[in-house]
Length: 624
Ligand SMILES: [Cu+2]
Image (cartoon, rainbow, N blue to C red; front, side, top):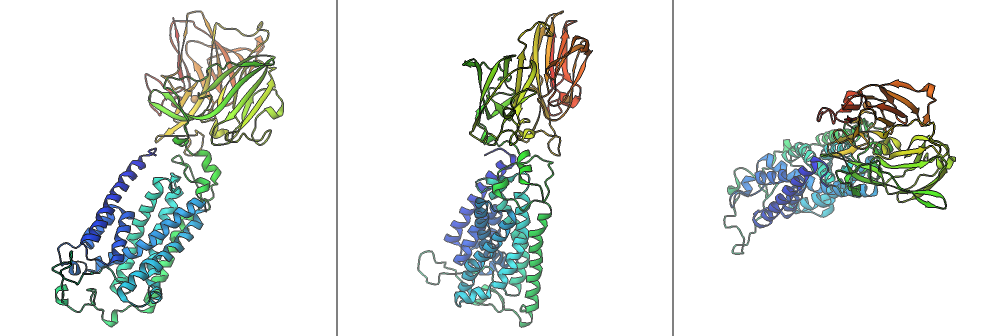
């Protein structure tokens, strides 16, 4: 639940809201001489507006000293608050119920807004306004429905004019948990919407109270003396309620010239109608109101991603963070990826089991990422076989999205190749697929996801496939070897997003075999020894110029293919593009610490920070 800083603020807010609501409810029903409908209005408003509701109650409605309520509530600004409360209490209740309902149904935001308006208006008109007015003015229920129609229209329009854009822009904003009624952020947006709506509706309500289109706060005394709880100082004559002419609720009677005219009411209804239309439509220029909670509810987008009014839901889901609740396994901080995977032999076939799932993984001692991983490690386990082997991979998808595995560079039957929806149906969540083929080639290869690879491979779905020659004679040899698999990460604001060269998607962490320097391995050698470095472009975005200090290496194989002796060449940097592999042999010429690192300096930092002299795509060869 606490996956973003705002979550802590929201919990604090709703604790305050609960405490405020309890206080207002107890005080209203025990101590305050206010009409029952109004009491409920304040309780609901405090529930929605938290401490701000409490503030309004104490400043405008709570009887400060016994017998003074009538005088205390008489100023226009307080009557305006009362009037706004009984409008907003009803409207907001209707809107919030409708918002939760439409979100559960997954309707598009544009439809949500219309349903919310109708529900708010209906709830306000038929419940709060009419019941309230009936209590005050007498008359039948339907007379009051008719009488309160215009005031309700003006009030509801002005409130929704402010509440609609607040909801649209925040629900369809970065943190789309705001579309999910199961998330606290949804209720936070509702609260903020009511507060903003209240502020705008207040201005119109003050006018309506001033021309007696609406009533505000009033005082209801228990007139029977001697009963417990009856106030002893209840004023009995109009004089005690102040000077001048008052109606039965303590309000000044209006000179006939000030009474609202038809043009005035029409103009107010018209102007608030225009504001409402703007509040409903203008956000649609900026966010995609055609989407609903079923499309994008609950996902969190990276800051800086450009989302237009026509950005499709799939585009957003593609760049969304891994929600921490999907993590099914937390790897120990010291766990390493690229672990050898031992096959079992079934009828001469080497059988491997691979499972994709969501894990939490340390790329540094104090930096974890949420990752998609084969067999709970990043990179996935190393599959090492011999030329001529027949191999079978039993794959299980324990992710919450579809996926497949592609065997990069392999000559194999087309239906074993892996591209989702092109050569095979995607493996659905919980599904399985069996890959089986004969290995005819030799060298450095790798396997990776081939469904939404921009997302899934960036989260860690890749691993090395090393094929030893049946006849090692003639193959380039070294005293030892080390495989280097590259990856780019985007970890920000406690969440892991798929790194991609797109607005908002640029990586800030970089790993060799799932670890950023100084957590990368150290290769230990003696002077005169050789090491074969197998570079694998298992990353998604950049061409990383991988450079080794201490003298040139010999490039002996490219993309798995061993170079003829005459074609091998010396270099000290190879540009490893996504998908490429280079086998290079480096000789330890002098003792000391020699670096292997990417030559784009940003890629040798951890979120732009150097630790122990480097970071990211850096590792050390220590020569004695
Ligand atoms: Cu680089």
